[in-house]
Length: 236
Image (cartoon, rainbow, N blue to C red; front, side):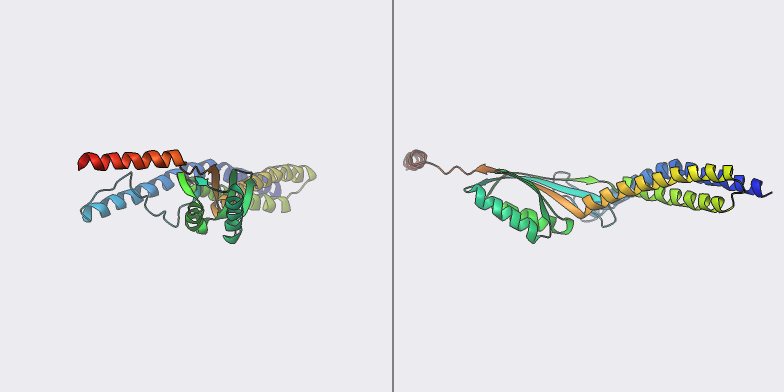
């Protein structure tokens, strides 16, 4: 009777572990459906306001329950590379972030996600912006999937631990311990991926490339002035 109960619990734990795939397939469609509902609400709100949603216009604010990793690339024309570099490092540290990599003309810094917009504007003020690209990676579906997998794996671990406490023989104990080790390894892998996402969600990446700011020489100034004068005289 005891052995029958033990192997019954083992089968139950195995079934709980195998249900991870179901949780995976259910999480992604739910996230996609939620994103679709947000889009529909935005369209309806625009219609009520008498306007349309412009895909090329400003992006709507990201709902607080979505998981988006934000990044930006910036190319600045500056007069002094050293001065601009010092300002970039100081700005990153002042924002609560740090410098990930640095060279004479390229800097990659991490700043808290909450300070992303302010840090980007402060960086843009250091020179003349020649290029700016802001982009994000929506990891909401993956994050929900990870949480579902973790819950399933933790239930399986609890079932195996219960089974281990009821093992009647050394053979049963070894088999349960082997299965338990596999579940524990899966949990650690999932936790590692979740930690990776949490860190990237908490810190945004700003990549700044510096180029030399070219001031117009005397010949160009003379040419521009002559062109302006000829244009004015032509219309007199």
